[in-house]
Length: 169
Image (tube, rainbow, N blue to C red):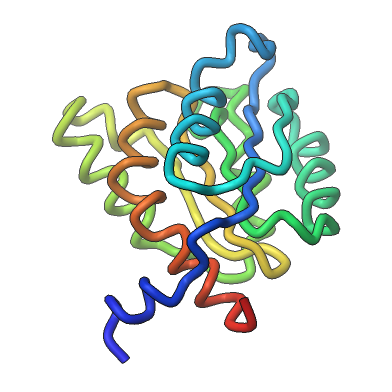
């Protein structure tokens, strides 16, 4: 079966969680989380959970553990905390939890970012993979990065990815 057939057979509506990782944002100032929600809904997906958590491995892991028990949640998209500053812990927390990494996601994201922002793209630690039967994607917190990832990588493949790891859907 071709990848086009697989893509068509994936679910058209995926139950998604959006988690913003930030020490300073709240619901009103969370432009990137709102952008993810809006893009998902526009594409016909359902946002089943939204949260803002501190950039703390314990809080990130705790939120992910709760979502892993939520049957409506098939994909989790985090934004924030993927850089290299001392406070950026999302990559470290998420990458240790992944069952299977989708290395191509980070590679292509950084390539596309490089085309927009130049060599600063090397400092992004965007990552994706599977976690307890779900797709788990971690993005930088900037709205430009979120828009790029959602439009060029996530939305075109989200149903396909979920369908691949949950073939009974």
